[in-house]
Amino acid sequence: MSRYWSPIVSKLRPYVAGEQLRIANMVKLNTNENPYGPSPKALEAIREAADDRLRLYPDPTATELRETIAARFGLTAEEVFVGNGSDEVLAHAFQALLKHERPLLYPDVTYAFYSTYSLLYGVEAIEVPVDDRFRIRLADYDRPCGAIIIPNPNAPTGIGLPLADIEALVAAHLDAVVVIDEAYVDFGGESAIPLISKYPNLLVIQTLSKSRSFAGLRVGFALGQRELIEALVRVKDSFNSYPLDRLAQLAATAAIRDEAWFETSRRKIIANRQSLVGELEALDFEVLPSQANFVFARHQSQSGAALLAALRERNILVRHFAKPRISDFLRISIGTDEECARLVSALKEIL
Ligand code: PMP
Image (cartoon, rainbow, N blue to C red):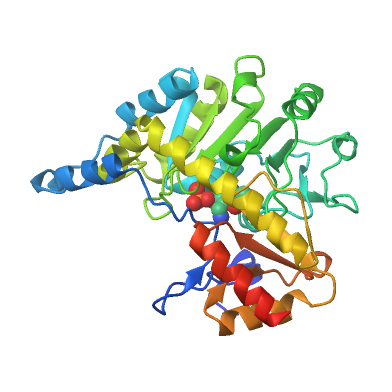
């Protein structure tokens, strides 16, 4: 607390970053990165562009990237907004679309940035409890609101909602903006993108950090009808007129075009998730049904905190949340076959 700080800043907590890779041979399953790495074609695009052209400002409209994303999803470039990771896209959405006289609704067990951004941008928020099996109950969103944000699949539970449920939610709230955060959708979820042409109140946000394994590049995007995208562009233009640097624009364009790499990578992760779930269940874990590149699991007798510490001693990083309702659980990102095998053998040793 400082006498120079604004009242809002004193309420913000410093971000506690997930532990980073410091020790060689560490198995890092704590921040939902994709172990298979980005498209080699995208890496080549970075190498080719890393020259004197970096003295020039990047394209302020990121047109080639937006056109590439639009073509991939059957939309027009005017229906695409890009930013530095979906975190930045979300921040712009909070400023441009979610600040109303009526409250914003989101689940009580969900991505922590929604509450942080609500505080930072002065958005009145109501956290809607998930049910006793950690599922989002749509009937609970049947109340007056200015906006709704739901990750599909949800994080950290990994539980997805079917497209029909998303459509019912969007259709029931035509006077509110509904944001579907699809950071993890490519690992078995159902995307709401096909609904965009029908619903002017729907904004879908995706990222290259997970299924395209580019968390270090920082590229995310929002898709929606022009009216919503225009609002995001106005906020972005007032904040920073260059949405993405030159290398990020080129690499992201190449990554979106490399459909074969994307397919192989996400399929491997889905397969590894299926076998990891079986192994964890055999070790007496309850594992929530996941459609993401992580699982959320609790052991029948060991606490989440104890397991976190015991795994850490064996150079394996997983994520534990202090929030009382979920403090028994561990969130484990899906690694390579080898990394999953190391996790399972460490757990066998511990339990
Ligand atoms: N939404 C959700 C639900 C997430 O879990 C994350 C990743 N931590 C993000 C958005 C942000 O991802 P990025 O900024 O890397 O695109």
